[in-house]
View (cartoon, rainbow, N blue to C red):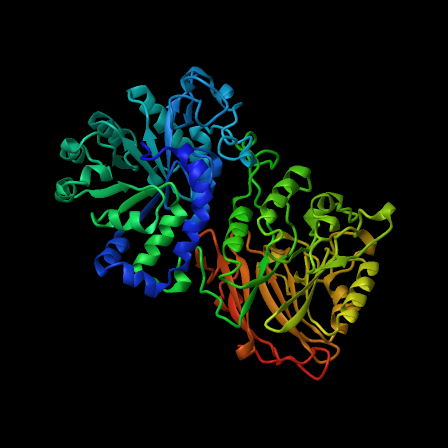
Length: 633
């Protein structure tokens, strides 16, 4: 589709202003929205059922790349639009322009290069150096990426029977015809695709309003009108309505003013270069409850604060991940990327005081994945205290986590007042357990002082001795611990089914550090149960248990809540502390889908995902007479 504004202009100008636009939209509450939007526009917004990411999420990622497609999926667009062309050797690829000059480091007509030559080009650096190495994707790659996740809109840049049949072959073999929308540019093409790919829907990319009825008669499902055609008259909208077809309009940045101007014509489908912004704007216009806004849960009220727990982030894709068909694609992790985007955007709104990663930050312990993990966490660096528990995937069998230490060394955090140090060993053995593999974070919120420990998977005795000393030193602070292994199958599973069905509890088996490693039960016995200021333990590791919680009365009578979360791509945890009512609200939130997780195929009970804990948050020292209320709702 033709872009109304130059995208290179967006990459220079919009990046300077996108945050101010985003924040302006975020500051609008339901009352503000109601004052700006009429009932008619709210009704019109409710009719929009298709949000199409134009060339992917092309404001946030380089257009027509897998990164842009993945971003569109992560922000909740319902469809992604790509432009389809043919290479010199007859392969179909994704690129808007006829030439390579604007969006790659190549020059000249794209059709003069083979698919292999096209994929040697850099299609990301023009947008931002951090996207260096993004390729021009093939249609096969795009179809596989979208299959089962999002509708794929094909803007067919060529005509002819052979071209159309090649497109159909790729979609039949690698995509999902029922979730494919064919953007047809001629009546002949519309009729041909109705025969070749009858399960697909069609969008009529009409060249002029005079052809609305002919495209409708050819069987297209939706008609695209350019907003500029409607500046003087809405007659074309009426013709589309009489034809019984759906109306699609092209937008750009999805802001409030633009979206209201489009909604006047009653479209069922809108495209945007910034689908996340468009989705949020539509929600604002509708006047949805704050909790249901795209990309948001209810704002944290004054006097409250939140801790965000990031479960295992092993969803790496592309080069080096052994995923079939992705060997040549750049390495990515759209889940981790979306989660840290959401956290960064909501630091103030959710009053986030700590971010805690439960470990397995990578899937394969190699430098490429660690580099990408660092990029994801860089969005939070210097903005909020955070800690990482080193998981079993983050180290070798003997506990060597030197790659973790390369990117998250203690020197990276030394400048921050909230950094409380780490377990140190001699230089000779630092790769095992040392140099920030076990760390301390100190922070205050709502007049309370906290100490957070992040302990590696199966921490050995010397680490636990250090942890005991840290908790004793900071006995005047409320304590929480994040460690990778915790809850799950109580005994080591003997069969794959045991991971799902065996008795669950605090695990008694280990994965790392050999004979030196301590099981979660041993870590409890040797350390956790001894400290009266400890109230919370967070863990991950067990995707086949996924969500679990238990509470235990420790040695000094304090209740300790143990919480497991390992949702794969299904969500992170937002723990809101409400001192006025002595409650911690636990919300499992899915930034990819913009909704709360109410149930999963593994854990169907809602109260394992959305629940509250009672915890006394009075001013006295937690090591004094205060006791945690042992009731829970």
